[in-house]
Image (cartoon, rainbow, N blue to C red; front, side, top):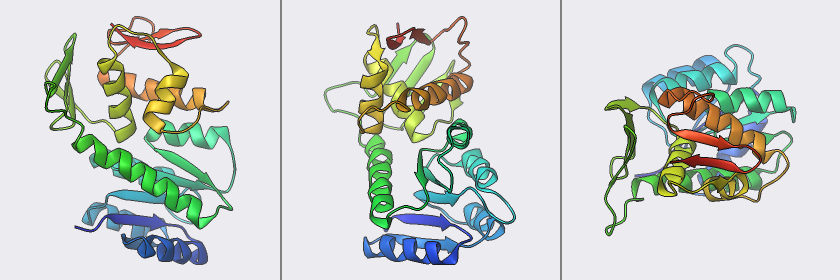
Length: 231
């Protein structure tokens, strides 16, 4: 089955160009030039990844991201005309997986798409024959086979990045995982000055989902100046 990608941008030239590059890689691509058409596609079709422009004339990219995250966990890459930390933090908080600042090189975007898809699809085959498919810590359970998370037997809907962060911390239970190590392991990229904020935003969002109080954590503990641990 072909990998299906949604591309949303009101600049038709950009949208069409991205579509050409992605189709050349063998992906099935749906193009939308406004938020309304994109919302209809999100609600009526299944996708493996979405690329969303933030600034749209009707429904902005953040609102489309909320629509996706209401029912789906596939990767979302946001396009922004500004290299703004505020934009990035808001998007990451809502569940975005990556950001690309305009103007960008189409090949760079394609590379980021491939990286996100590798990360997303690898979770489905993450279970190892020699290990148990269930990992449990203090009422939190990760099912590697199902790629699912529960807290006190209640399901928790995680994005691929959130799932990967949680899995990595649980797999290294009892060890303080440095922020740099966590970023390299989950994002697969070199740690930069802005990477710490990226990790912090995802940890905060993950804590909200699993009902973890940062001041009195049940699961994820922050060791200031070092990293994070699950004991």
